[in-house]
Image 1 (cartoon, rainbow over the protein chains, first blue to last red):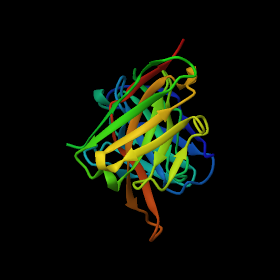
Image 2: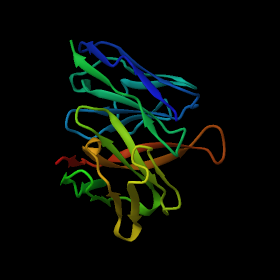
Image 3: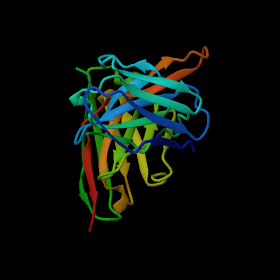
Image 4: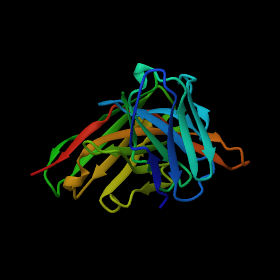
Length: 108
Length: 128
């Protein structure tokens, strides 16, 4: 099974900050990496697919990069509505998708 | 409007059974693979099961293999999850999610998969 590890598990930041979240795969997954945002009591929302492609309707302050085993999600200038939990997910193994454990982004 | 609506959750005793449904609308359901993803209280997301558009390919997480069965009825635009031998650790919000694909850069036959449409979830509680 492919394990996904996110860091940090939690992060405090201020509005306007640049924030980076990291996701590492236990084996190479090429660019088969997606990022989701989840707010309390809500369903996850797709932000980035194929490591760096921005989902339609998602603000351009969100960006993704990486390939192989190491990936990053960057928010260029945090907005109040960005405080949420973020998950990475690999789709390299279509027989068994796996998510990272999540990164909770909190207001400093 | 593209929409997924889950139903069928509830309170069930350990060892019991429950059948979840997911009604799809606003897109051609029969063209998409579908997933069930769950989230235990205060925990992260866990992929549970996937089914291809024609039901030819079905996959399960090890944690539910042999107890859960995914199925679909393309004529009714519906996805199902039959859950048997339920355990306390199956307590979670269960989401259905659509699998979309785009061609991958590495060439013909390679595709990127991602879950781009999610329902609001249905809650399953397993407790005596």
